[in-house]
Picture (cartoon, one colour):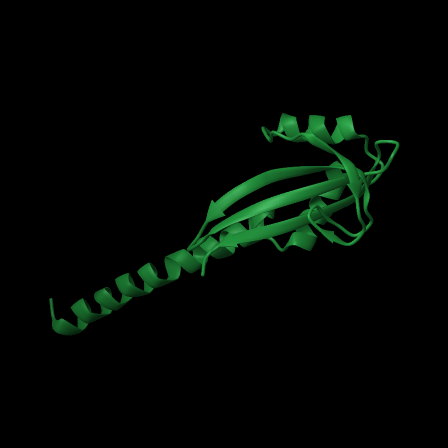
Length: 132
């Protein structure tokens, strides 16, 4: 083989090695809801657990997907950072939905807030990144 062919093959291999992680990340972002921005995850979750769903309905939906969750009772103030909510309520569920890693670990956490009658009034998602 001449040197030009060897050089071209090396360039192709290097290009594939450089492009592979970006292709993987693009695939995950396009087809896996957990890699999307929090607002898009919230929209997806609201289609399965819409506002007005009962506490037991949300718990059942989460448990069917292997997510352990418990209801925390007590006043939840509006615009709280923990639990993350804009409306406030009388109880909430914090559920760790997904953990994935590309370079750093990223956790997808959902907060379901319920009113006094046990109906879902707010659903918010936060992503926590374990990195610098």
